[in-house]
Length: 178
Image (cartoon, rainbow, N blue to C red; front, top):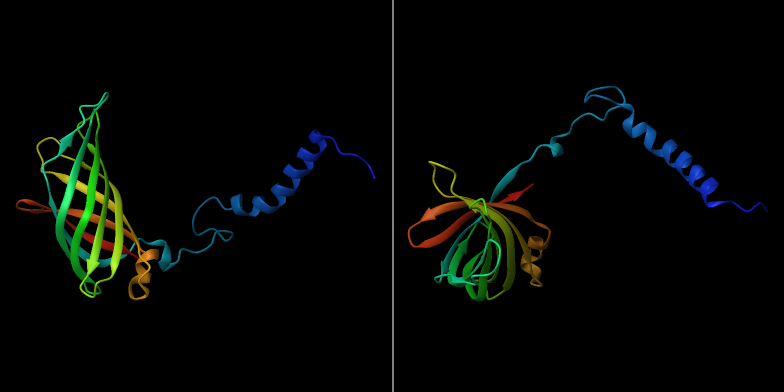
C-alpha cells in the first residue's frame, strides 16, 4: 500500500468534494432547468401566536464602561393567544445593552405560567430604537422552553414580535413563523 502525503490527500479530497458540490452551483438563475422550482415553503409566512404585556420596574444602570448596560426587572404581566393564556411570574428581567448609535440590544428572560399551571420559559433577543422623527421601534425574536406535554409544540416554534404601545407597560404582539 502506498503512503499518501498530506498534499496528495488534500488534492484528492478537493476533487471528490467538487464532484458532489458542482451540481449545486451549476444553475445561475432561479427557474433554470438545473435549479429547483420555488415552493410555497420558501415564502415567509406567519400566524398570530400571542399578545404579551409586561410590567417592568424602573431600570438599574450599571454605569459601566463603553455604552452602558441597564437591567430592568420584569415583575409581572399577562399573555394571551388562541392556544395559551396566563400570567408572567417572577423571576424575570431584561439585560439591555445601550449602543453608541442610540439603539438598544434587548436580552429578556421571563417565566410564563399558563392558566392550567404549566410553566414556560420564554427568552428573546431584540433591537429597540427611535428613528429620527419617528416613534419607538422594537422587534424581538422569542424562543420557548417547556417540559409540559400540552405546550411542548412551543419548543419548536420560531417566532417574531412587534412592539405595541400600551400606556405604562411594555407590550408585544408575537407571531409564529410557519
